[in-house]
Image (cartoon, rainbow, N blue to C red; front, side):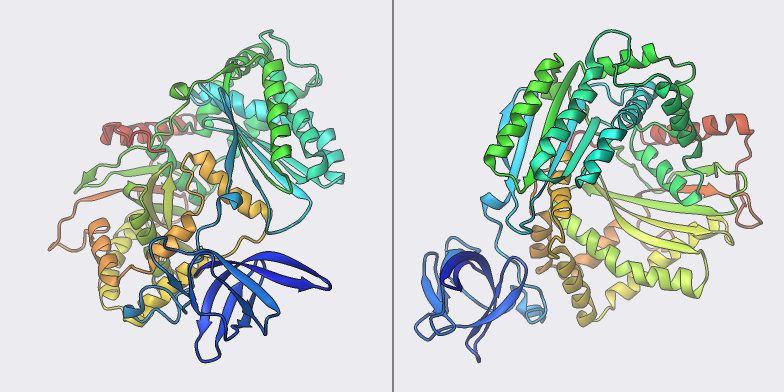
Length: 579
């Protein structure tokens, strides 16, 4: 698994290309090289040894191709081009995908500007080779999520800005330039993408609009046309009113609000906007933009000079708007509630927001630990192994619900797993009990699973993690998620695939026993870091059994009380800042 550079002739010219040696066929004396977009077998000339060290050279295909070894997995020993990877003692050697060497620093984001209030990352695309680029920005504000009113004003601000750039966005779209603006718990996000030639021009238009709200006067900027504030406010309130109308999505919202102490409900935000005026709204946004920190990623068909041009553009807009610098110590923290380890797990029971919804949704969330490589891999592997048996048993065979799923959950550095069932024929209590029985039954299936079956899951997951990016957008999104979360592990999927090659079934069973002790097994300790969300519909018995009865006017307040009750149950203890 060494990295090479390969000299290939095109007509009368020869060019060097990067490649990775993935497999070696001793019988045919051939090596499989992986290029940017394809793989190809080459015959190793007899004069070239299969034992490589950094800097060694050789030829392929009767001296028609020259190569030089540029890198290899381990710095302290020689590398032989071999088939497979470690793990041959478990019978995985012939099937486990080869792990490519780490990407060189030139192909990963690197900082090109790091000054007070601004940090810009950049990398130049060498894979897709299209005249397009991506610019992502995160504008961090100190009070973006300090109250429902501030968060609602941020949402309204985004709606107004989208409305104001409609005409510009249409003209840019004709030229295949796109943009988006969003609000987050820490501030605002901006994405500009498309042909790189005029991308910074569009970026400048959007940023100048955003920061025009930082002026301390009470008037909206002239770019906001008359009547648009009221229109955008009406649309936003309608959106808040329609939030959580489906039992399944509402269960997920409740779970997130339970583990996120500063996540505000749509009802709380809508209520905070009652009687809001353009002047009070403008005062809030001016306050938010008074001190900011901007972090950006610029990638694609752009070199270091282009990245510095983007740096100059953003710096000038920040200076012209007279925004102050938000120091790192005052940037908002993304906190997650530490679910208590208890023998009696909390159940949050709420009715569906739509009184005519007959469906009941049950979500069982197991919180595991703060982010780390070993448990992250085991969670992904367990999710993959459990998914099909869970769906087959509860959905196909028993018809327990029309939607049955399980998946890994990663919340600002805290890992977990959740099981969800949506049904119109079973009660929430029956679903919870059935999930507990499934966890007990599946424990036996997991421990007795054949080694070949287990390895199939391991290899399948490793292949998924090593799947190549299909577009610049997909690659940029992966890099940007690391920046926006503050983790900065650029090749996390590669690290996870590498760790997978050493995972054994006993290790997975041990983790299963630790994380999912079943309430149906009296022989084992029954303490779990777990809680359940029951969103109960208003259909026929038994699906509607246990539905809380509230007056429509106070239903949202009662739901908020349930969430606050969970925070009290957890002692409002959080994991603290992780990234």
